[in-house]
Structures are given as C-alpha cells and as structure tokens.
Image 1 (tube, rainbow, N blue to C red):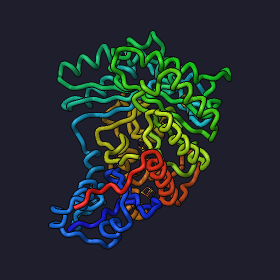
Image 2: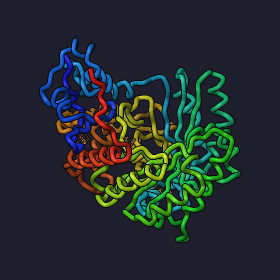
Image 3: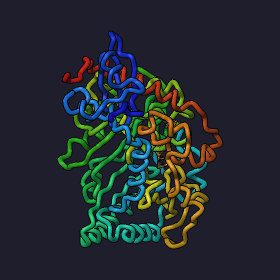
Image 4: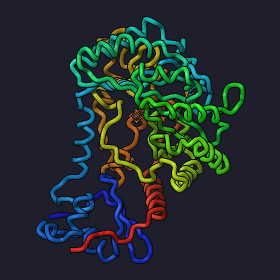
Length: 453
Ligand code: SF4
Ligand code: SF4
Ligand code: SF4
C-alpha cells in the first residue's frame, strides 16, 4: 500500500492545479486538482499493483510524494541524522585561527566585547603545535580529515596554515589519509600574493561574505569594502587552480538599490559565471558571524523585513542568471556540533562543539593542551541531542528542511545574548516556503506534469 508522504506541502497553483513540494526529497510537481484528489489527498490509499501499471503513481512514488504505508518517515529522518552523528569514516574540525578581524560588522561578536573577553586574540606557537598534534591524533585510523579554517579573519593569522602544510599534510599523506580544507573569509586579504598559497594549504573551497546594505561592512576607517572584495574574487576566479568559490550575501535589512548595485558589480566582473554558488541569508543578529552555519530560515532575531527582502532578492538574482537556488534542500546530515567525530577549536586551543560558543570558555569541553581532560557536562548534551524531542517538530511537515532548527538554539535558547525563544516557526517557515515555491513556478512554469497510465 502507498499513502501520501507526511512531508508533502500542497498549495493552490491557480487554473485548477495544485503544486506539491516534498520536503524530504525536495521534488516539486504540479497536478490537476483531480489528480491531487485521486493520489495525494489525505487518507488516500493506493495499492501497490496499481503502481506497476500506472505511470503517474510510479512517478509520485519515485519522487517521494507517495510512500509505503508501513514506512515511518520520521524514524527514517532520525536514522539519517543518527548516521551522520556516528559517521566514523573521517574527522571534521572547524578551527578559529584568530579572534582578530580587519572589519567590525555591527552584528558580529567582533564588534562586541566578546572578542576582547576571550583574552589575547592571537594563537601562540605552542597552541598551534598542540592543535596539529591533536588533529593528527584524531585523524589516525580515519579515511579523511576535513578542516574549515575561519576567524575573526583567518588571513590575518596564517602561521598555522603554513605549519599544517609543512607538518600535518605530509604526515596524513604518508598514512593514506585524505586531507581537504575550506576557508571562510571576508575576502579583503584574498590578494594575488595569497593565491599560490591556497593549494599549498590544501584549500579546495572558499566562502566569502558581503552585506546588503554594504554600509554594514565598512572597514574600521568607515570606508566601503565591497568593491575591493569583488575585485579580489574576480582575480581569484580567473586563476587556473581549482578552488570552488561561494559567495554569501548577508541581508541586514532591505535596500533594493544596494542589492541591484551588488548584482551589477557581480555581473560586470563575470562572477555570475565564475562563482560556484551564491547564498542569500537574512542576518540573525544573535548568531551572526562571517559565514557561519546559520540556520537559513531563522525567524526570531532575524527581522521580518530582512527575510522578506531575502526572498525577493533571491528571485531577482535568479532572474539575472546568478547561481542562486530558490528552493531549500533537506538537512539529512548532522552539523559538526552533534557529530561524534567533529570539533570546533578556538584560537587558544579550547575545544567546543559549536561555533557560537567560541570565546565562551565556560562552554568549552576540553583543550588541545589536555586532550584527556574532558568536561563531560559540556560535551554530553551535544552527543545525546535529540532532533525530535519537541512534539511540534515531530508533527511538522517542514522537519526535513530544518531538522528541528539549530541544536545550539534548542539546547541553550538565547541564553548567550539574553533573548528568549519565540514560537510560531512552523507558520512563518511554511509561509516562506510557499513563497519560494510560487517564485520557482513563476520562473519555470510546470504544467500538470505527471505521465498518464
Ligand atoms: S562578520 Fe566576519 S568580517 Fe565582520 S567582523 Fe565578524 S568576522 Fe569580521
Ligand atoms: S516546528 Fe519549527 S523548528 Fe520544528 S521542524 Fe517545524 S519549522 Fe522546524
Ligand atoms: S549547533 Fe547550530 S550554529 Fe552550532 S554548528 Fe550546529 S547548526 Fe551551526
């Protein structure tokens, strides 16, 4: 027996049609109202023999709109997340090279007292060596080691990158352990002199952020930085080396003129063709920092105006041919915070599970200097974290897209910044998803596209 997936999101598509998006497979289909009634209306049961000689049923099953009646879809999601948590093939590390930054974005902790409260912003030679020993130890016996280097601004403190090329990479190569790395930077120092070093450092992916409006990313002398960053990206993407460059556009609040100017700047430099991808995200004022893994659908400390602008701008970017995808993708893996073989390392060698905690020594669970001395009270909650503990999430048709939201938020609420959680995420995110579906269909109209028997 096949039944409609609990993760189908159906909406009227005008002219008697219904658009259906499945949040687990992220497939989109348009059905006539009759077809929807016959196959996907609540309570519909389709017998398996029908699926073998009805092409429409076979297609709906293949794309996840129809699922076996006995399948527990929530348990399947949970298994995927648990598999991610216990994936022991490799080790993932996010390393903050410095707390220093050459910019001072108002939403980032760099602009708050937090960077200063974290003591000296520089990594010492002793800590750099201890980090390399720690990482080599964690990678032993694994198939790969993957590192995300970030700051502050990581290109202000590249000594550890040099040391990793001299010491860590050869040691891993000798043991047959694959190494890959990404760099998360504001792009100001991505100059010609740095390009040759990227391959030495083993960097295969770079993420650069810019802001809309650009006044949020002026330098410390109050001067604009965006043109320089785009010029740097233009020069970098013309290099023969194989580095995949992604641009993240932080929408701080709506400013149509500034967004248009940014798009024009990208197209003028042919970055619409050279960048691997562009992501737009409404800035969340509690969690923001250069390119960190913000939940894309934040709803509370992200302003409504910024979110609405973000949707509008995505549409405009797609129309202009920029490499932006409108529809979201499912979160079928777990973030580094919940992974058994994952860690975030502060510039002073403190071990954390989540980027949001860097600089908050009381949230650390250990140190690269004393790897056996674990503060279990700070580690265990991440390893025991349940994505499905909240009943609203268990019932929610959007669960595959957000996996119950950012675990840090669920575990600690807003205690770092004193803001309280706000309810209503499901309604708000559902509205945003519907907007994106409508926008997608406006750009790529799908007729009722089911094959018939
Ligand atoms: S958001 Fe990035 S560029 Fe801005 S101050 Fe923070 S680390 Fe620096
Ligand atoms: S209730 Fe909110 S956090 Fe939970 S799955 Fe739905 S949208 Fe995500
Ligand atoms: S807990 Fe949230 S902020 Fe932390 S790593 Fe995971 S998704 Fe990112």
